[in-house]
Length: 138
Image (cartoon, rainbow, N blue to C red; front, side, top):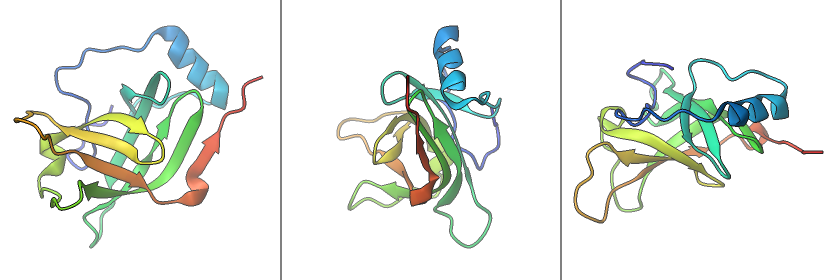
């Protein structure tokens, strides 16, 4: 798992571990092992694994990474967006963790320390249309 300050992180107190059969099913569906820098998150139908790191350059809201579960594999760029009408906090990577993937919205981030409702969420929206692959199970 990446501990880079420019990458999204897992919920800090999470000791969750996916069942071995779930990880094996994801790896088998895609014919490729999950890399160690992916964090465990909620997926579309089960667990998913994700990595998204800020791209160096003038666009602070541009990230690169991937999301993978048993049915979906996205590799490419993401754009960090806040709830409409809300700004993206400058320290978003320190204050938010990646919770789950929702199609077509992308990676959903929640604050590590939630306040009273409504809770602000952030999205890492996939922006590379050709970055998606869908597994066909036989």
